[in-house]
Picture 1 (cartoon, rainbow, N blue to C red):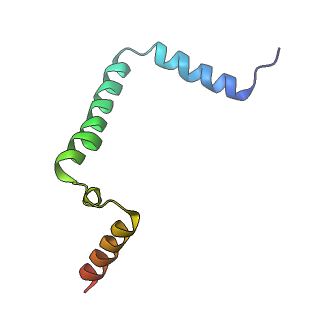
Picture 2 (tube, rainbow, N blue to C red):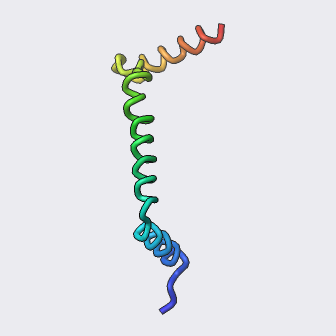
Length: 72
């Protein structure tokens, strides 16, 4: 039976990651850094300004007001 190119690509990467030794540690470090960047920093440095509004119209009005004020 002829294997498709997709099957061969998936198998290639699966075998490559399975046989890694130091690469697994490096991937773990990368994932931890991404978690810190996107989750922890978001909580402390990027507050949700639109969370205090209930309706989409209120959010829209707030964004419009902020864009106009910052453009001046």
